[in-house]
Length: 86
Image (cartoon, rainbow, N blue to C red; front, top):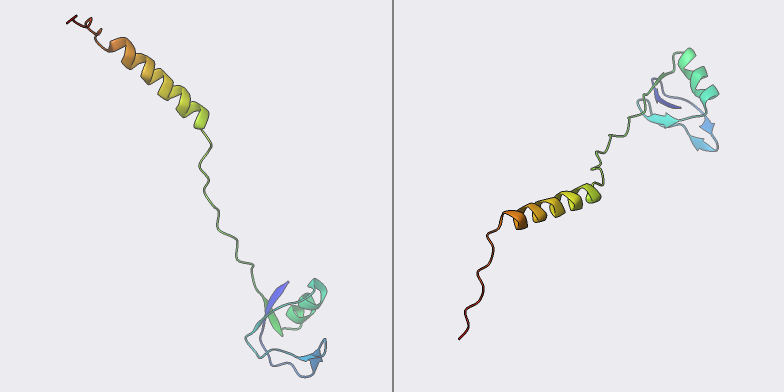
């Protein structure tokens, strides 16, 4: 759970000094809840990942529509005149 420290912490955590006041740290849920309950930190909401729009795969529908248009165009096209002999 991510929390923002409201105070400067003395000592170390896992062998390292605590980050400065205002830093956002990721802690185990129990430890983060304890700091928040003691007023030493505020929970930080995880930023939701933005949704990505996806285009549906409609290749089959497009191919069918293209084929239908081609058949319609052929049906409406004027008949070709027979070629003249030389």
